[in-house]
Image (cartoon, rainbow, N blue to C red; front, side, top):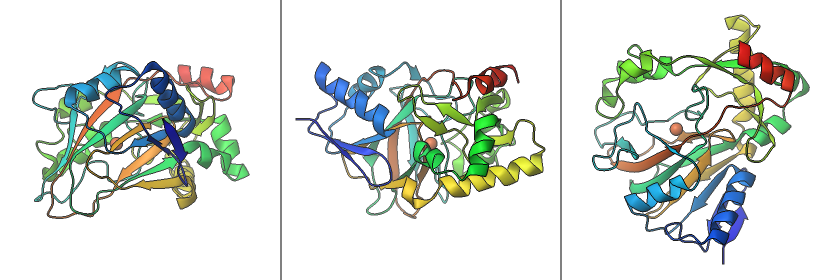
Length: 291
Ligand SMILES: [Fe+2]
């Protein structure tokens, strides 16, 4: 029997299910758990690459990653790898994948393939919980503004990944990074699956607030990040062989711990397509579409 057990902070663990062989009823429960909790975890799965792809397709079309190294036999699968000789990991600061796209990715399904003996946890933070607990001043700000998102400072030729030699072979295609077009989204969205208000800014890719100069926007964004990263909105997932995490980029932030120096960690990631995002306030949504 499928059981959905909410975790402290955010997310839920789904047990009693083999995600390579889901019945229609089980899939409906998994989809509901995903909408309700923003990130769901499975243990003890035996998921082949083909089954990983088939599971992803039950939620949306697969987004072929432009920047990550791809699995040699399955281009749908992006490789998230850290070698024993690498200092830096991928995704080591709070972010939401693809928020810089006009239609940000729905989510990512990450499968553990090779784990370090200890460490390498992933943290998740609920952007609904963060929004609900915002102090009034910040809540007024996000309710009435849109924010600018960009991936260029990360993926372009002069971006963070290109500047650090450690990422060679792991992250590339910086020419496509140069072509990225910055995009505007409401600072609080009506979540497309749950309908809940979710804060939609993140330290990785949000670079400004409309109607504010850079300095003021930076201060406000820092205040929002300090608030949203508080432990009461977060959970920590410790990977084991057979673990799978499926998170919604519109509902949670994530952060990969980099605390396993000298060891190899290999994860397979599939990201699935999302949709354009509406604000909780239709005025903001229509304004954001024209900025
Ligand atoms: Fe990520």
